[in-house]
Image (tube, rainbow, N blue to C red):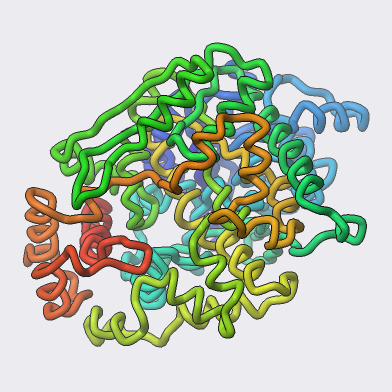
Length: 590
């Protein structure tokens, strides 16, 4: 797990190594253990290393192989690298290290882009092909590992975080009005390739990009899930799908234990993280470390779920760590959490993951986390609404969007007003082939877009801010493909995730499964009150922070009664505006 960066020049000049060093070292928290650079003519690659798969310098990066004419910088973890290494050894390749980096380098030499479907892991990497004078970059299926790009007629730069590219300088920092439309409407999700900055893109998930030294581009999406059962699965009933789900999840959890360091679990007390604990103990992992976080109650809403996380920790006798956070600590740490964000995010639990990661990093370097189960197995409340709707897109929008188009128009100043891009994107996505049932269309959108640019990005940003690697077994591509084949009637009952809950009954106590659905709450940022509300008011009304984005009348309305101004997902509309201002301020964008 690491931070990667690079520059490829198109103007016959050598790559700017000094700039690349600034970009790379900005990502020191992502890779605190070591760093390195490779420069050759128009290309320069940078790397910050977090030692996980192999601890020796034999896997140092950038990794070069002069005989093969390749140089690699890689962020991520390939869980099936031992199996791939055996294949490559049979083809005659010799290895000088024991980790996954050299397997990736030589696997690319052997198979080129056809290597990608063979990989089970999370990754973003760049390979320079010396003889072709060509750069190949790729991102994993679910976009667990990020990759940001900034290009003009002179050069292409890339990095694992957007703020790192900002650290390189010479970057246009104007906002993208279309991205702002997505941010305000689509729950702060800005789908790739856009980012909030007009000059920066992100490589879409499951995509590779090849760029040569003249700036010519070739791009390809190399994977997408297909919905609906296979022919031989059409007669499957609940028991069949339950056993397949449990078998596949067992394999996903077990393979993510491959590391040269201890692996813990982020334990919220919900079904998903509890199931991970149960499966790890079932696999024979003793002395498992688990970690939970809680906050002060607010607005009549409880700020922790310790009763359930304690139940699991006691049941499996884990080495449990419980972290309680006061409101004053939230305000104190919010600026640092926003500095760690590659893009502005509104989810209240960003601060939870940031502070939890700070604590976890004192005890271990790798954790398993339960992100993805809701998006794969229909755990959210809007899936039944979409399933039975005459207009599924309208039902999805009513349940998920933070504003309708009229309210969005009243929120932004005229210079930023655009068409309904977010609404058009959702309707176009629903219309794509590959999913016929309305609920499958919603699940596809959520798992390949929303999941990538909300929960997954949140976990990557907040854990890597503390040099902590988070692994997400529910995003194992085998489980993702399986979940897409399971008909909705086996997912929607019992409040959603029915087949997953039935699988969980074979592993964990029923009290956790039959509990009311919860989430990682931070009530103080949802019910803005007291010192937190004062802080938000100052942030939005400070003349030095006025970027001409929001209509003053809307700010007055939201500040006068923040408790009643909640989105359909029960988030604070006022907090959403403040979060954007805070992120821009912490990134030095005025």
